[in-house]
Image 1 (cartoon, rainbow, N blue to C red):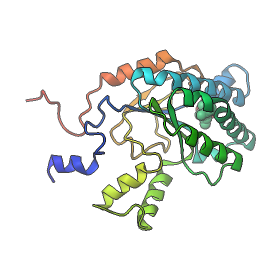
Image 2 (image 1 turned 135 degrees about the horizontal axis):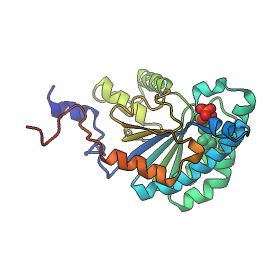
Image 3 (image 1 turned 45 degrees about the horizontal axis):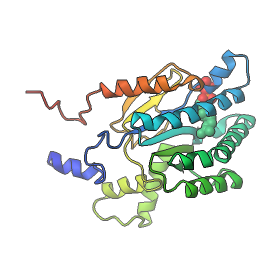
Length: 253
Ligand code: FPP
C-alpha cells in the first residue's frame, strides 16, 4: 500500500492535517486525588472534591491554549472496584458538577459529552448527562468529553459489536467502519497530547485507539494541584515534539 493510501485509510476527512493545530485534542488522566488528600491528613473524598475544582480551572483555561477537544478520565470501568463510599462520592461529585456547571458551560460555548457506559450509573446522573449534552450541543469554543465508566478495550469491543450488527454500514473496509464506530459516540478525533498527572506512567485503558500517535506527557503534579501553568508546560513540551507518524523528518536527506 502506498503512503497516501495508508494515510487516507486512517485520516479523518475533516482533519486533513492530522495533529495540526486547527484541531488540538488533549486528553488527561487526572491522577493523584487520593495522595493529595492523604498528604494533608484528609479523606480521599476531599481529594476528589479538590480535583473537581481543578477540572473547572482546566476547562476554563483550555481554549486559550488552542485546545479544541479536552477529554478527561473521571471514572474508569475498573474504578467500580473501589470502596462503595468512594464510588458514591465520585458519582455525587459528577452530579454536582453537572448541576452547577451547566449554565457556565453553555455560556462559555463548551459542548459537553460523556463517553463510556451509561447502563450502570444512576438514572438521575444519566438524565443530568443527557440534559447537559442537549443544552450544550451547539457549543463551538471547546468540546469537553468526560469519561465515566469508561474502558478503551470495552469501547473497541462495543464498536466491533455495532459493526457486526450492521451499524454503521461498512462502506469501505472493516478498518474504516471500525474507525467510524469508535469515533461515533461523541464525534471525537485522535488524541494529540495525552497528559497523566500524579507521577504514574501508564495508559490505564484510556483512549487506546485514539492515542495511537498521541504525544505522552507525564507530570508528578497531583491532579488537585494542576494549574493553568502546568497545562501551559504540557502544551509547550508538546510543541517541541517532532510528530512523524512513522515517517521521517521532512528536512532529513
Ligand atoms: C484518580 O486519582 C482520580 C479519580 C479516580 C477520580 C477523578 C475525579 C475527579 C478529578 C473529580 C471529579 C471530576 C469531575 C469531572 C467533576 P486517585 O484517586 O486514583 O489518586 P491516587 O492515585 O492518589 O489514589
